[in-house]
Length: 340
Image (cartoon, rainbow, N blue to C red):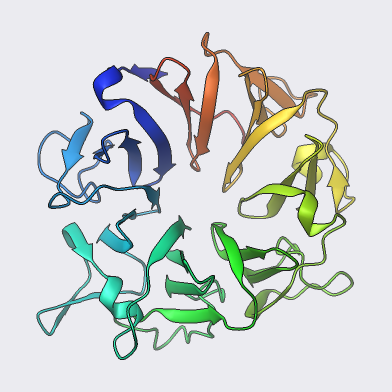
């Protein structure tokens, strides 16, 4: 477990983590990254020390971490750095597989149309989603499981970053990425696409489709208006409802001990936030405690346990190997997860 202190003058506002490393967005719009590896940090210097990434004066408001890349959003612009499976960056008419520093990719989303302002981004293992202020959704990156909304050939995948517009008929209020699937939530509908070998997209209640390429309505057992948050791992998706309860669908056995799907998880706490990545599923209770969901090797008979952080937590993030928490005094705590 590692605890980081940043001070009140650059108080942490948002936290993100993935295989690529850790990212924090601060009250002044600055971004700091760190990891054991320097491959996708967007800057020079010691990779293990949180260090500022330069965005030329643009204040960052949202971001995300994938397997080997990171994304940041500021002033309507999307920046990306690192590398994405099956995707290259076209820089000065040359395609490269990796970009060390933040690259503004916004123009790639509307090369021949009127510029749009982006207001949210979400990141999966090797793909990303972006929502505009008009409620349109764009996706980019690997689509070997249909997670970018098109059927990609294994023999001849796309060689360069070509964003795809996904939603044309529904106004979307938020976007969510699982490891290899995607969700777009509107006021009256939620659509999903990507890997669906365990029905983790919620598309198709009676028949399992390995890949959902064309976005389709997710058939969830609750009104859209009651959905507070969606968090998707590799084989299971969890939904936080306005009543503070969590419903899981997909491969739910390791979370509940039951093959039933969808199923409401038996957690005797009122929930404030959820986070998921691969087999890591974290829950933040309304009184500031962090629970890790899933059958734990050291406590085999339990399907959740509390992470002893000794601080009141206000925000959480999950990666395949780590958990991340923001405390009420502005500190950031990271730890290795226990789920196997």
